[in-house]
Amino acid sequence: MEYTKGAHSVYSMTYHVVLVTKYRRPVMTEEMRAAAKERVAYLLKLYDGRVIEMKGEPDHLHILFSVPPAKAPAVVIATLKTQLSMFFKAEYPEQVKRYLG
Image (cartoon, rainbow, N blue to C red):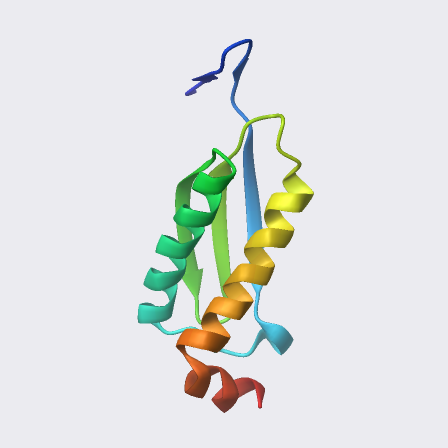
């Protein structure tokens, strides 16, 4: 097990999140999932976190990540959901409209 050391703490806080597309429609291509991995890594850095592992299928993403104990997991997950949705709609509008109208 890998521990992270802070100024006054030692921790190993990992979270497994599954983000599902609306109606489980097969929206995401391999290119979209690769772009999402980069975006998630960037967003988690803002919370002093990191991606441990990320995989996905056309209708969902599995994200295993770590953040410090001072960061609320609900806030981090809400940010990921919102930002990924906005990212996909902005960068891949035709693909999203094709499946979600």
